[in-house]
Length: 368
Length: 197
Image (tube, rainbow over all chains, first blue to last red; front, side, top):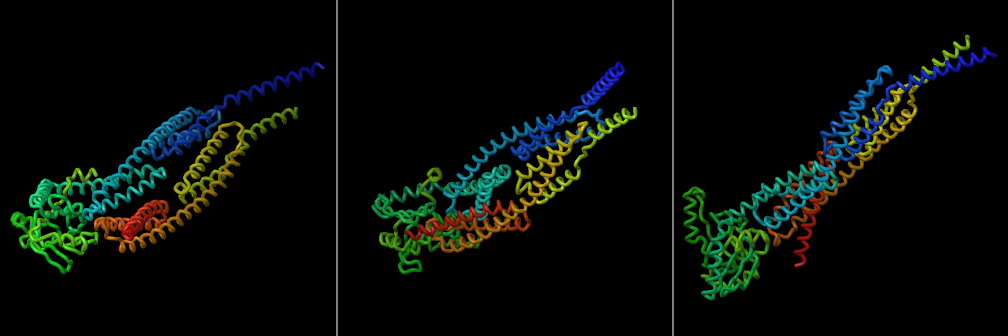
């Protein structure tokens, strides 16, 4: 009986010892940083969703590199004998990855919202610029290079709007920058051309005032042509009586320099002859070139600004056959036949015809 | 005594078996990796970016699970194996879906290209009929320039299409179509305005 108890006691002690050894064996196995790795992976995934790979490239790249290093070291440690494994490095890389990913999310969110606001402002600004270009310069004889810039700029803007609506802010920004370059340079070029043209405004103003004054003093008709607005005003006794649309020479912007330049002259002229039944129906011939035109022509020729073989030209008329809507004449002023009929009736040889670039100044035009 | 020795040996074998019975499901891992590579090759990242990112993330999670098991004394790769099998199905599906999506985008580009060519043709006809009205030649000159820009954009989009970069082609052609439609409306309005006079 006693031997049985001794046997049982022996087995209990052996089992206890074995259990204790197994416990020791298990409890001394190093614990892998699974939670840290999981956190890093989740943070990386969130960073990707917040487009950190695009908007916070560096931080996202660092987070990713740290995660890869953590996994690499984990695999390396797992290849060792179970009790020789050390996961400190793995844990450190995983934590660094989480931190970097969180920073990347913050930076990306900030960057995205900044982009959103910034690009929206830029789109609005450029659309306003397009509107201004269209309002002020659509009718100007812009050089084809400027027209191409406007067209390409508008196209980039449209593409940028599509990218923006898809949340693709980086390509949208790139295209907006290109659009801004194109549109701003086109606007500046067109504006500076116009500004250069408007340096003659004080002279135009004087001519306009003189034409109205003469009409008032002589109680007579006076014809005033505003090239920029394509209008012809007829004054009587200093009061505007008629207003007609006109069409000009194709190169209407600027004074006539020489024969064949398709420009409509600017100056104070008089009607020197009246014709009916011409190619363009009724016509009023003006005294271009007057003395001032001839002096300027000779001066510019002497300076070499005009070729020595160039001729000053002439035969500038106010005539019918207008209403085409385009500036099509060789330098004449065309009106619709029925409106030409009115002018033809009231005008006489000697009636003053004043042709100016604009009766409004640049500021008035740009604040309309 | 013989029995005790036998029992002791059995216990050792049992421990050894339990601690090494799980082997890394390398075949499944390789299969999923190959499938992910295939997805990348068919441009899943471009056509189905969210789904592609999800697959990559799932793979990362499974690989972490595998390492967790490898870190244990008693390894159990069964659940990881099952997850890998499910992920393989998902990734293969992604490859197929990407092809479908790519085909959809391709078709959209083709349709838009056909549409825009019709609009461009119509614009050409409308341009000839366009009133030289009060807007003047300069406006028509601008429209003409824009029509040329649209033509160039269509050529670029066609080139992207021919190269197989359908997403680029789609973005370009959509912008071109919007501009062409805008010009179409502009010309039609101008013609209608003159008719009303």
